[in-house]
Image (cartoon, rainbow, N blue to C red):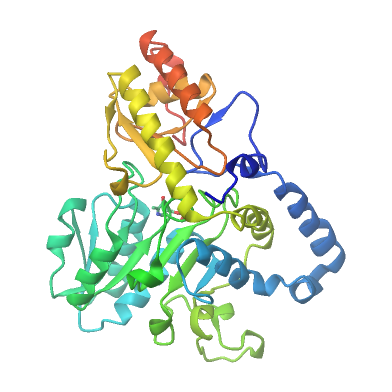
Length: 398
Ligand SMILES: Cc1ncc(COP(=O)(O)O)c(C=O)c1O
């Protein structure tokens, strides 16, 4: 291993007394982020005012950061750009892919997909009319459901609930053989598992930066288009910054070069400053090391929880090759158990109806975190500490 995980851990602010197993939902604060954002606020926005778009390179950041993320997901240089939220990027990618298959009407997805992806697809289908259809099947049934009428296969690689991982390369090959394009949501993959977009023959991919990539709450999403397709794409969300010459202020829309056309409007400069602090850490990291360490941590966690807490049932695939970097357990009182865990300093999260979800993020999660978290979980289960009204009252965000 070439990555020094003790060194990367020291670069994050991890509150004392907390074991954080939720970086798959919201990454922690890189220590350098506060200073980076302060510099962006005071030195750039404050002193340079609007000249910072040129002088501080603000306008180029969505592409520059796109390349740094691209390295982690096997994307060719110049194929990834940042902006908007992931839901918007899902819509953009899907609309573009459908437009490239004008004779076909079917989008295939699975019932394990993140609801926002399905909602966006449903909204797009309603807007398009003309017989477009969103078909969903169980995750295990996706491969068999790839039929010659398919326009686009739209999947999230790693299931947000269970951590189950699709076989990207295999499904792309199958979809391409049927004449369809594929859109991948990498929200739970980027920075979590090794992804090889170029090597897998991927068409479109999207993802967020506030989970494993630690850009902070509301950080921008990213989008990838394979270089062989980018020049053919006609963006549905044809905003001015995706125009070939935004500052010509032409009245007709002409798409920008390659991935530039997937930009929409003004990028979130302050969030990108925070993301830069995180990418400075990611630049020191080898994804193969992250994956190896993630498997060690998740295997240790599963073995320890199964030995210590027999009332919890593993909801994630047992085979590490078939799961991402999270582990989920089921229990009918999962919500209350998670609230009790949080009250005792172990932060994970809960996903309805009964999933306790734990994220493993080698940049700052240690073996001692695994041992410590399981000891506290065992005490909560053995002593029934979760069985209190305070832990059963549902908050807005679970
Ligand atoms: C797989 C997946 N897709 C889409 C989204 C929605 O992302 P956003 O809120 O940035 O639009 C999420 C959010 O957690 C997600 O996990």
